[in-house]
Image (cartoon, rainbow, N blue to C red; front, top):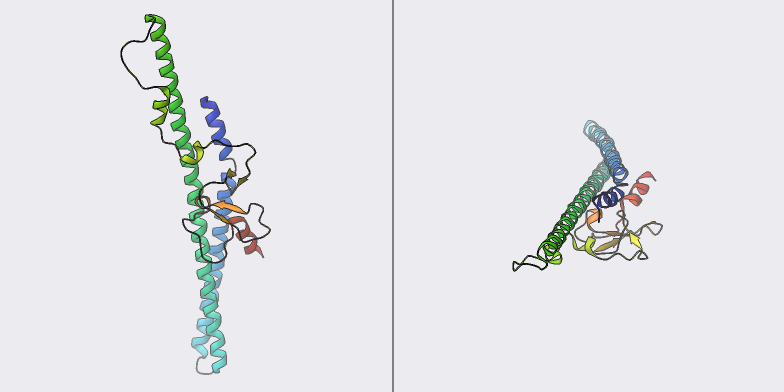
Length: 213
């Protein structure tokens, strides 16, 4: 494959990356703002409780303490969501870096193969036959390169694609619990997962929609 073709394929694969990154950064910024708002509410409730502790009835005290507890729980939830988004963002970028490394390795292997073919042709033309020396075949040289197993798999153009990366199904995948999710299935690495989370799980896009409601 020509160098220009490798570059074209790689650029196609990262076409949506800036938009995905911007979306995640905006979501994290929104979570930060919501957390700060809740902290302000907690401070106000704590001051109210401290200032009026002697005059408040037991039910009023309990109500304020419950509000503080709920706000803290919500802050933790926002923090967990932000960590998940940060991991997804990292994996998203890392996936494309690995893809670039793989394409570079393939390109280098192609160059070596062409050099071997050229050397073989020149030797045959000048001597009429190959000398006694041995050298690796193009296939053995290509075998020295170790691109990712996923990208080396033959791709069926009719096979459906999934996930934010728009690739075929491979490895461990997780389904979004939103029944209206347009993508449904996601690769663990693309959404920052190493193990299946407990309870319901929502993809980044559906998570964003839920935050808006």
